[in-house]
Amino acid sequence: MEIVRELENSKGLLLAVLVVTMACAMVVIAYGVDPVAPGVHDAFHDFRHTLGMPCH
Amino acid sequence: MFGTFKNGVTSGVLAGLLWGWVSMLVNSISGAFPFEHTILYNLVVFSAGGIIFGLITGGFLTLLGGRLPFNSVLPKAVLISTSFWLVLRLGGLGLAMTEPERYHPDIPQTAQGLVLAVALGVILSFFWKKDPAINPR
Image (cartoon, rainbow over all chains, first blue to last red; front, side, top):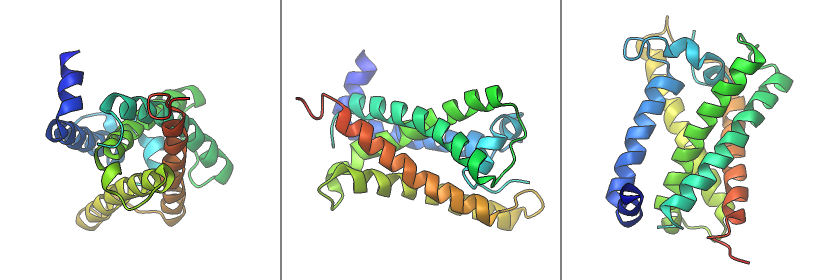
């Protein structure tokens, strides 16, 4: 696929993709920010606690 | 880059999937946090979360592995996985300070999380070495 070839050849693009993925993972999984994405707090609740991320 | 993007993502996804299941098992044994959802639900969630975390770790290992001052892939993978976890944990600390009624840190869970972060690096290094594109027989 074209996108895979582009990522293979571009460190900058790979870094950008990883940073965006990491930001999404932080919002959705690590912190469960409900105001940003409703429902994510409960969705990954047990996973978040297992990893040691603070939660109520 | 340390290996190719495709190999890094493949190794990361496989390692993350296995790590998600290991995390479920470790938490069940340690009792650091009693699960609130069913086993089947958590199996799906831990698989998805593990895949995403493994993908991120594998991607950063591909990107940064060549620059790290280690010869073997094991310390590189462990350093990247624990650094990623530490970044998340420090962000959580910031959230706990700004919204203490919403975010409560827990020491046993934090300790378990650190151990699991190291485990992700170890599992990723195992899959990294097994990748035939990186280590052809």
